[in-house]
Image 1 (spheres, one colour):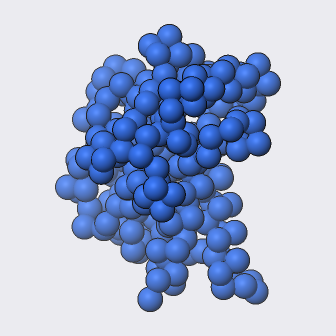
Image 2 (image 1 turned 120 degrees about the vertical axis):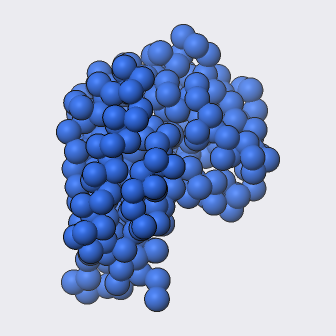
Length: 230
């Protein structure tokens, strides 16, 4: 079995979900007492979020590049960055490691193609929603990406950073997400991407009509399957 190197802590709440899903997938496939080989470098999200807020993406990339290098030295076979937003700096991180990085947007694209999705709604941080590093991967593959309004983007972003990243789950916030998703549904979204690894902590398929594409579940499951490949 290959060893998965996880760069986590962004936030640790969703990193715990990665660990759980990866090991559940390995157990389901291999049975018995099998579990995944994982090396985790969990960064201080306070430092990363400060870089995001200041627009200092190069500094954030330096922190994650150091994490990637440590995983390579420790014997990881490939890297999983357990967050959507920080995939913005994957090209910079990749320059500092010879290990392949399993890209979360490309993993999500595979899931969308399997369901023949042509138009999809995207939820995530304001960086993921307003910048092209994530959306463009889907657009280049011929998928139309719908995002919330500017006001709704702020609501989604604030709930992520001020509530979900600190483990605060509110029914009222779930209602806000439901309303925003309903709006994307009305605009023709054939599915909804949970493009932030914390969103699945708040809302799931049972609360909304369109099919859910939870990037945490997709990314972690594909990582586990990659680790089990010959």
